[in-house]
View 1: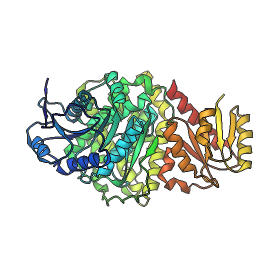
View 2: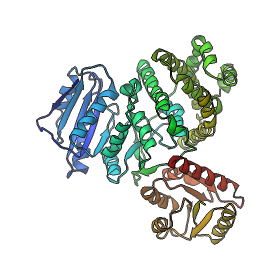
View 3: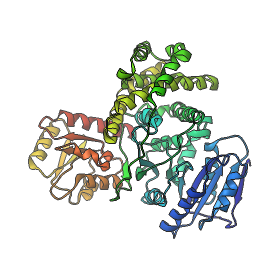
Amino acid sequence: MDAEVIANSGEVKEAEIVVSIPSYNGKYDLTSTVRAVDKGLTEFFPSKSSVIINCDYSNNGASRDKFFTTETRIPKIYVGRQDSGGKGQVVRSSLFKGMELNASMFMIVEPDATNLQPGWIKKFVEALEKNFQFVAPLYVHHKDEDLLNSMIIYPLTRALYGWRIRRPVGGELAFRKELFERILEKDIWNQYVSEEGLAVWLSTLAMCLRQPMCQVFVNQPRKTAPKEEKEFVNYFNDTVGTVFSLMESLENYWRKIKWSRPTAIFGLGSDDAEPPEELETNIDSLHERFLGGFRKYEEFWREVVSQATYTKVQEIRNLDMNHFSFPAQTWTTILYDFAIAFRGKDAEYREHLLEALLPLFYGKALSYVKRTERMSVQQAEDMVETECMVFEENKPYLISRWNGA
Amino acid sequence: MAKILVVDDEEHIRLLYSEELSEEGYDVITADSGYKLLEKIEQEKPDLVILDIKMVDYNGLDLLQDIRAKFFDLPVILSTAYDTFKEDIKSIAADYYVVKSFDLSELKNKIAMALEAKYSQEE
C-alpha cells in the first residue's frame, strides 16, 4: 500500500461522518479549519460518531504535526501519500479510509477558506441527513469571483449533464456513501482528477447518477487568498481537463440530455446574508493576456475552431477596450470546438490545447467584467443564466461536430 | 399524454390554462390553493406543476421548497404577475418562470422544454 495512514490515539474503528481536509506541504495552516470542523461536529451532531481526516499530498510532516497538535474532541486520522499523485488522489485515499470505517456521510472541506464556520458543517451534514445524496455549495459571492467556474465549468456541466449545480468546483462538498459507491463503480479516473479536478469529477458523476441532489445556501462569502498565477494555470488545466476528459467517458449520457433542471436549495434561513468583500479586477491585464494569446496561439486556434468562430475572434481582437465584447454564442462554440479537439489526443497535445484556451478565457472574462460593471449581483447572475441557455441551445452543434469528429 | 397540475387561486387563470393546455394535448388537473399539495402530487403523480407564486394563503416559493424536498425531479414552472421574486434565492429551485399573460406561447414553450429535459434524463 502506498498510502501511509496514522490514526490518532483514539484508534478510530468506526465513524458515521467523515470530514476530509486536504493539505499540501503545509501551505495552509489547518488549525482554524480543523477547529471549525470539530466545533461543527460536536455542537450539531453530538450523538453521531465522527472523524476528521487530514489527507496530505506531500507527507513532509509539516501538516501532520500541525493537525495532531490542534486540540479537538473529534478523533483525527492522518492520511499522507508519498507517491506523486495530487490532491484528488489523496482525497480519494481519505474517502477509502472513510469507507473502511463504514461511514455513511462524507464531507470534503478545502483548507483555503479563511472563514469556515461550524454552521457550514451543520448545513451540509443536515442536508445528507435529509437523504440528499449529493450536496454542493451556494456561497454568497462577488460577481467577479471565480470566473473560471462562471464562464466555463458551470455552463458546460449544466449543458452537458442537465443539472444546474452552480458550483460544481466546490470548495466544500458532501455526499452519502451509497452515491460514492456508485461513483466508484463507474471506474473513471485520470490525471486531471487526481490533481485538482476531484470536485468536478464528483459533481459530474453525481449528476449522471440522477440521485437526489441539493445546493446548500451558505449565507456568507467563502474568503480565500487569490491564487498565484502558476497555481491558477494548474487549476485551470486540471478543472477544464477534467470536464473535457469526462466528456469522452460519459458520452453516452450527455448526448441524450436536453436543457437543464434545477436542484433543491437547502439551508435557507432567516439570517441575513453577509455581503461579499470588494474585489478589484484588473481589466487591462485581462486584455493584455487575451491579445497576447494571438502571438502564441493564433495559428493553433485556426486549426481548432470553425472558420466562422475564428473570424469572430479576429473581430473581437480589433475591438477597443470601450467596446470590448465577447458574445456568448462565440464563446460557446469555442468551448465546444476545444472539447472536440481534446478528444482522443495524447497528453502533450491536450496540455497545449488547454494552454491555448486560457487567453480566450481571459477575453471572455474581460467581456463579462465590463458588461456587469454596473450590475447588481442578481443582475450579473441573470446574465450568467442567460449565457448558460446559449450553451444549452447550441448543444446540437456540439453533438453534430462530435459525431463527425 | 403528460399530466400537468395547475396550482392557482385565481379561477380565470385555472380555466385559461386548463383550456389552452388541454388543446395542446396535455391532461390538466387543477388545485385552487397549496392546501395538501404534496398529498395531491403523491396521488395524482403529475409530470409537471405550474405554481402560482402569490396565492392568498400560500407562498408559492415556500411550496416550491416543499415540492423539491420530496419530489426532487418533478418539473415546476413558476407563474407570476411580476418578476421581482427573482431576488429570492428560493426561486432558483424552479425549472422556469413565466409572467402571467393571456398569450400562453411562452408558457407552452417552457412546458415543452421542462418535459423534454425530464424525459431525456429518464431515458
